[in-house]
Amino acid sequence: MRVITDRGIRGHILFALSVMICARVMSPAATTVVLFDNFESGDRYNLNAGEILNCDLYQGNWMRAYEAVSFVPDRTAFLDRVDLAVSLVEGYNEVDIVIFADSGGLPGGTLETIHLSNKMPNKDGYLYAPVAATSTVRPELTGGKTYWIGVSPGAAQGKPSGHTKVFWHNNGVGTTQPSANNWTRNGSWFVAWTAGNYACTMRVVGGYSGCARPRSYLNGDCKVNLADLAILAEDWLKCGRENPADCG
Image (cartoon, rainbow, N blue to C red; front, side, top):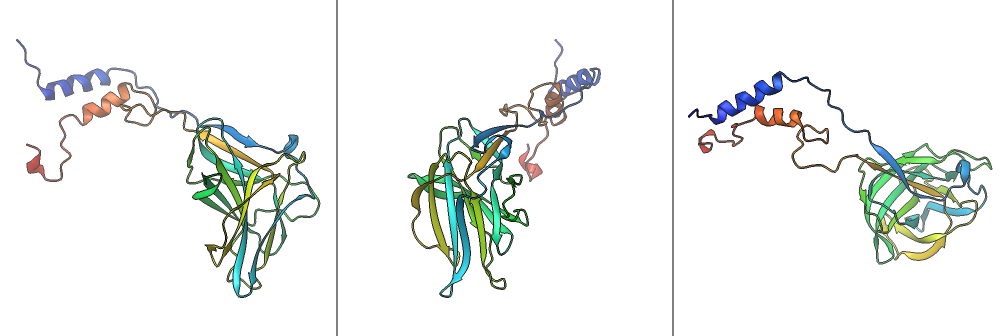
């Protein structure tokens, strides 16, 4: 009887793979899906009505306003970006977009903060394209759960005068969402969140990697195939212990 050793198995696998046509490995293209959107068609919004947010020095303390609007994604996806109808009334063109988890119907823990500099148009009565805040953390948003998008004037603290005023425009039809507002004083939350209902305009876009991550795919193409078998064969019998004496 012919005995095939482990090293022989590795050789057979590598030989079989070497005579096959090598297919180019490509990762599936990422796709995006809109998780929430209250812009009107053509990305229109109310040019005059909305919420004013301030960052200013008050009685020796830096006071910074936050407005947050809730949404519930209908499917699970990774955050790709948030599009907002925000404009600069006066001051520094700095704004923070904050993604919060939910805590008892109010904003809870911060999932990501996206800072934008010189991205807001001036509030001058004209319609502009939405301001896009692209996620780098890409937190996973679970379908059916509540999340919050917060807007706050960017850190004017330490700058001359420091005052900044941002306008978050309402949507054109006045459709409201459960919302909340709050303040920070010198960077710390000053009061509890106050619930409200605002019509602030935003679009939340999610993304899919396109892969459910099968356990045995090794090369990142989201398919378990000969390319993964080649990686396995190449590493067959290799020992990864730092101390070679432990490999036995």
